[in-house]
Amino acid sequence: MGLDITKMAITGFSGDRFYLSDYDGESYITWVDDAIELCSASPINEDSEKYRNIYLTEINPEDLSDIKLAKIYVKYMGNEYEALNIGKGFDSVILKARKGLEYEDKKNGFVDNINERIAWKKIKRDEIEDIRIEQTSVYEEMLKKYGEDI
Image (cartoon, rainbow, N blue to C red; front, top):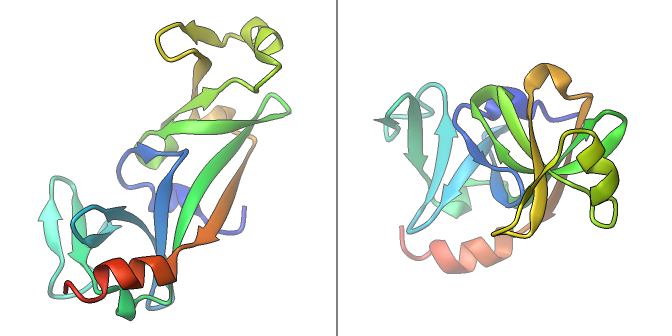
């Protein structure tokens, strides 16, 4: 796995499109909206603010060594699936059926969501065989968009 994303998953998040930021030698799941905020289990610095059961730290992208757009794939029953939603600590994961192999996946408990035209299955942490994270740096883009605002 390399990066231990399960320890970073202190809150639920979308597994098919999320951000990871590198700050002071650590990686953090990151919320990007009007600002860039690092999610952590404890305060990162004096600017960290408690939000529900986590801490959010608004950060200038210039203080980060990288910001990556990421996507998680989970190996389950010997096959790799795109993870749509991740529960806190990976206590549950919603997997998307493999394109073109939906019929086979339905035999393994995947169900149709007719409204969204996908088949999915919710699994528990102990059913995960492996996790792979696909990452693409978006640092320069974020620096241009958020660097001047802070």
